[in-house]
Amino acid sequence: MNTLEEIERAVSQLSPEELSAFRLWFVEFDTDTAIQAAWTTEAKRRRDEIRSGSVQPIPGDEALAQVRR
Image (cartoon, rainbow, N blue to C red; front, side, top):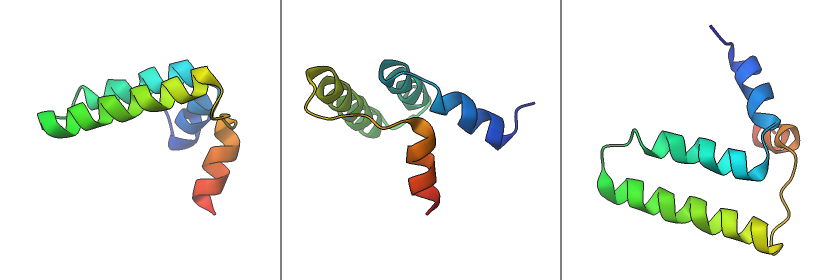
């Protein structure tokens, strides 16, 4: 079984596209269709911002460090 640290390390190494797909995977388990639709829309918006270059992603380990602070 993976520890939280192992999971965080693996997630921090995902590309922006992989991270979006990973987040969408969790949405599939949400039974509230309104919440599911909102998260799908948000994930696609974020993906599109990264693809267009209007937003620059930061490395996962840096993002996690910011969250912990």
